Length: 437
Image (cartoon, rainbow, N blue to C red; front, top):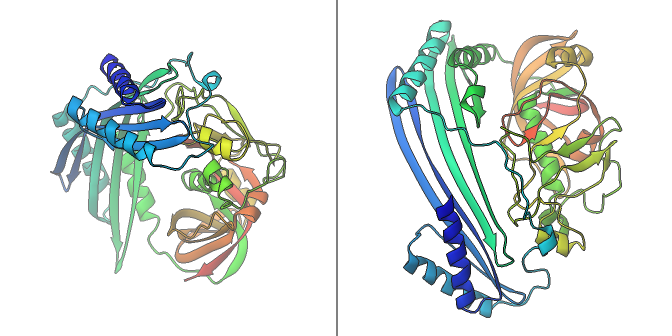
């Protein structure tokens, strides 16, 4: 990490030498490997060792940028020169510039995010092969495999600017996944399971992953379509994460100052029902979305976005905050461990509460318009009646408007999925349109 700090300091000094009034530098490196197996054979072994530098220089309110992956002195001097030349001929932007000094994270916390996995490539190959073998042997309807995969990586990050701030952070990420294919008569289905964590001790076992991959694949056999109807819909936790991701996109500063969000001018207005709270917790130990400072070097803090259903804050970087006449929320680069309030019911209890409707287990396509809130995506899942799964469904479309979808959230389950930057349980929506394809 000291090497990255020294590199940042040298680049800032070079930018000053070439006439920049201010500068900021982001340096990152990543190393690790991925192995995959298919049908008891090693399919691939990939080592990855990436590095990169992003540089912004300012001549007053004029900005020039450059990026490079070559850490040599000659390449850095050339990149700084290019950025400076761009800045000299760029129009002034009154919102351009570094974060105000009082916003910078000079006393940022040390967060426990670095847990290397002491596993060799040979051990990882053996683990992947065992995972796939367990899955292939579980059910005779499993006809093929897209393989099992093991990934481990270590990343190191440094950000610094000419206000005297330099921040350093490191994190690890590890993953095990398995994808199976089932066949019955002429029908074929595929599904998967995975586990991911920064601490390898938090990964689920290969047996759990293999069994879940098989169970999820088998239960999709015999899928039917549906007639068009309006019914309650449940998004299980892993799909609910995407539903909340659209909310995050709608409150991003860039979308707001461009007037390209359906939540423009919605501060202080009701977006969700009163029982819904949405906030972020950026300093959680061992959480994949944690960060001690944002991409502007600004302090990350616990933020409340939805309080009793009302939108209280936008998601702002320094630049977008200035464009909106507001203050940065420490969200340059996105949110950090977004969480939503939940009930004490698990997914099974939510299904009983719904009684009749659709449980969505997969969505496909890009039919989301953040400007209008219109939502329409291909889907598959299960038809529910009398509070129980009746049969699998596919070749359907679910549609609505995100305004209505968020306003009609009935309940959130306690089956929280933390395999990402958004932590949520299953979400029960009062009504959506379901159409057969």
